Image (cartoon, rainbow, N blue to C red; front, side):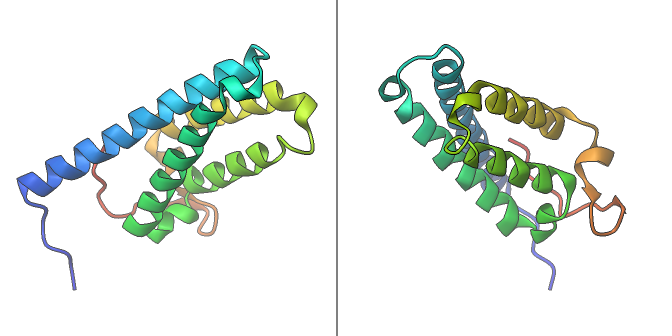
Length: 136
């Protein structure tokens, strides 16, 4: 059964929610990233780190609930790769700046790359489009 079209109120609520969540994520990434790249003590930027991780997790859940195909599209796969790289912060702590820069560059590829790249399915070997999404 197809979902009904969003009302204008639902559209704006989703759009503003997603935009707000993305803004919180960018603030968290900026605060934590600045601390990491400038060698600031962790206690000065850890709240930004938590903000980035929590908002990033919520955005990921949002995408998976909206359309599970996100997990096999390059945008989802690269997001999981970024999480793996962030997980290396513990065993490879001396390489945090390099790991962070790699994660940021992958983020730009995912966010600003052409749709053919972002929607490329690693399972199907071609672009697959999911449900229409509410931008934010």
